[in-house]
Every structure is written in C-alpha cells, then in structure tokens.
Length: 457
Figure (cartoon, rainbow, N blue to C red):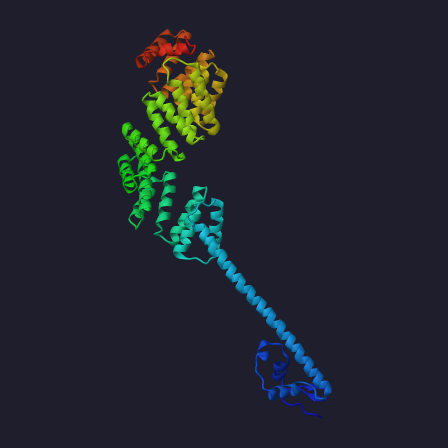
C-alpha cells in the first residue's frame, strides 16, 4: 500500500505536488504570471504539476495556454474596470465642478437652471464650510417663496456665520415680512464686518427700508443718504429716501429725490415707481397735467402697474371742476384695467363704483361696491359710494344706513353728510336733513351743485 506524503494527494498512480504548489502553478492569477521563472524552475514546475510522457507534455502545454488566456482575460477585465472607474471619477468631478460654477456664476442664468445646479452640487457632499455656504446662499436667491429662501439663507449662515451676502439677503426677507427689528439687527451686524462698497450700499439701503417700516424716518433717511454717498448714481436709494421724506410730510424733498432717480435711470422699469409716486405728488397738488404725464410714463415702463392705472383714473376724474363725461369715461377704462391686473383691489372697486354711479350705471356700480366691502368691510369710501347708489335708486333707508356707517368711520365727510341730509329730506325728516346739509356745506360750499351734476337735486 502506497503511503501518502504529508501535503500530497493521490491522482491515479501519480502523486501531485503539494496543494500550494498546484494552486500556484494552475490557478489563473496575476501573481503567478507576473513571476519571472528561470528555465530550470519552469521545467521543474512543468514536470511536477503534470503527468510525464508525451501525453503529459501535451497536457502541460494545453494548461499553460489555458492559463495564459485566462490571465489575459483577467487583465482585460481588470483594465476595463480600472478605466471605467477612472473615467467615472474624472467625469463626475468635471460635472460637479461645472455645477458649482453654474451655481455661483455672476452671469444671467435662469433661476431653474441655477437652482438645479446648486442642488446637485450640495447633494454631492464634496463641499464644506464657506464653499457650501455660498452654494446655499446662491440657491436661496433663486427661490420664489420667501420661506424657502429663508431656509437656504439659514443653512448658508450655519456653515459660515460671517457670509455677509447671506446676512444681507436674509435681512431683506425679514424686511419683506415686516420683521423690521430683526432686519435692523442683522444689517447692523453685517455692516460691522468687512464689506465691499457694493455690499455696504446695499446693507445701508435695506436697513433704511427697515427703519422706514418702523416709522423711524430720520434713521431711514440717514441710511439712504449713506448709500447715496457710496454710490451717487444709486437710483433706488433716491426712490427709497423720497418715500421716507413723504413719511415726514416733506413733499418737495420727496419730489426732488424722485426727479433725481428719473434723471439717473429714465428708461428702466424700476423707475416706474418714481414716475408714479411723483405723479401722485402732482395730483395732490392739483397739477393734473403733470400728474397724468408722469403716470402715463409709469404705465409705459411697466404696463402691469395696477396702481398707476388707478392713480391716473383719479387724475382724469378730478382734473376739471365741472363733471366731464369724457374724462370720467377715461377714468372708468383705467379702473377696469387696474382691476383686470389686480381684481382684489378694494380701493379700485370702490372708485369704479363711484364712477359708474355718476355715469348712471347704477346696477354695475352696486356690484362693485358690494365687491369692495366684501374685501374690506370697514371701507368708508365704499360705504359712502354704496349709499349714493341706493340714493340714485330711490332706496332711501338703505342710503341712510350706508351713510351712517360711513360717517362713523369719517365724521366730516361732506359727500356722506349731504347725501344723508338729502335722503332725510326725502323721508320728511326736515330737521335732520337740514342739519346734515348745513354741516356738509360748512366743509364744502359747492356740495349741492356737485350732487346736482350727478342727477341728485
């Protein structure tokens, strides 16, 4: 009986080499084929790994060929996976770099494109600290909703508490939300940090707006003036300072600042606000031609400026002392356009109610007054105008009731007093009627003639 050697196994009448040698000789691994064997070692390996004789020689050659093919395939697969990995790494790195560049680009890019690039760059998880803060800040600027923008600015400041751009933009959101104290606090901190001239003027501009929101017009004017010192061609600062001057009832200075904003940027849509507000100043001064000219320019620059149509309607309706049907028809057209743009304007609905009532379109007028009061139940003008509509319709009790409600809100309204007095006379309440009419004439001497022009006499 043949004894088995330690580490050997029986294969017919042949005894193979130890297992480790066989694995090294026949297993298809790069380690074997990378070894450099001398001819003697190769011959020894061939003769110990395979049977002897002609059949063994053929087997040996066949095994080596198979091993060589296997090794080649192994190397090809390894090379393919290695190349794929390299290409994937390089390509993903290039895409990531391109996303970051798109996200932070100063060029004009659609918000959707920029937001998508920012999100991919953030989700990649490759950026930290200041770079990640900039990505969140840039994405915040693309958000349509202030809540989503605020979330991004919060994250930007979490990763870099001194990101001044994020501080300023978050303060702007606070201002739009009317959280003026938080905005002032944020902008004061931003101004204590190193800022470019552009950053300082924008920070002063927004802090001025926050002060104005708080009714602190002097501080608002100081901030806007500082922004103008930094950039004397900063038209928005002149518009903002003009609003603060209006808050202080300094109308002439307000008009001067609006005029300067228009001089600096006469053809920009943003200047439409300056034209509109200056037009309202001329309107209040009863300079109707200049008012209409400015309001027309505001509409040209911004055809969807509902307030400009509304203000021009008022100018058309009031520019002549006598009732002029043509002007009131123009006013009706402008009010209808304002309501097409903004159907939820209680003021425009109330004014169109008045215009329609005075143009004898009483049923349409009543509908407008009802709509205005549905939006703002305590609207004194809408109550007064609805009282006038009921007066035109001969519904005296309803007219008196509406005039009563209007006078509770505005006790010295000449039109409401005269209308109620007229209705009381019609109901044979001579004493009450006389008292109301006398009070109305004390406020506006020609009130009776005005009502007569509208068919109430």
